[in-house]
Image (tube, rainbow, N blue to C red):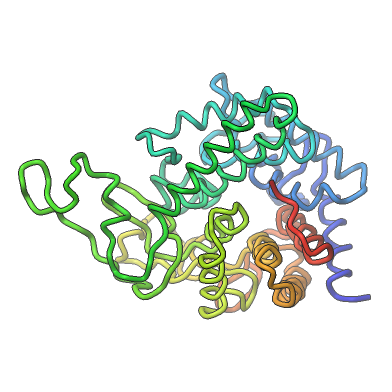
Length: 395
């Protein structure tokens, strides 16, 4: 049996072990994550929805129901729900609701709840730019410094808005058009503010935080302080976040891939991103989460990273198999089918070695997380389907 097919069958068994009556747990191991996480279960759903297995399908539907049932009075979907206590957690809150919108539209359409969830997200546009803002450590990188206007969050927002528009196209065409207009606006703003052109000029990325129209001087005529680009100065890519007169410098792999898959990135930008990944060998194991790693003394280093987020580990440049699945999908979307097939095989080798581990060391490739991770298995299935069909089934 071919390696990619053997690992595909293993992914199905791993997802079955994650499937319980409450939903799809983040890990199938007894010592693993026992919660139903919004992002984990919905990302897993992208691939798991294709599997004709009653146990897995029931778990996916139960995940949607449990997360919906525990949403806040304002429409916020929880970060996760504990299977044993039934308690909802909202700490890393930023992206779970958007993943829920995407997952529900693909598996169990629920227009009423989608409206409520997206209304809550509209309130996270706090400065009228159309872009969502978040607190530090609030998206999937829940132990990292990403903050303010996050690229990953806003690329996902475009996908969720388009998913909602597609779901409502027949019954509520005007509302559908409104969601499409908002998606286009967000995409335009991401391209205007986040795309770094490799010219060393950071003014376009922070000017939206100014309170006056003059870009060089403040209201009293004083010359503004403009931060300097220090890393990846000659590269072209989307910056990971924009804060107050600040920005992230590293290349965020997952966020840039979502920019491709959401359609935010055009053909030229898509080519630049995929070429960057190849040139910097981020796909040696698909896929390292970022480069360069953040180190002590850097502006974005935090003491709370502790021993987990050391350079080349965890969020700080670790290899995440679920991101590797999105990488395969982005290659397919870009028409790089041969590269996608090679990346799928490399991802299969990684998952077989690590038992669908949560994450691996960014330099050695050694598995360092928890085995039987649902989104590692689910995104392998999604990547397998993308290569098999030659298309990416996303809103």
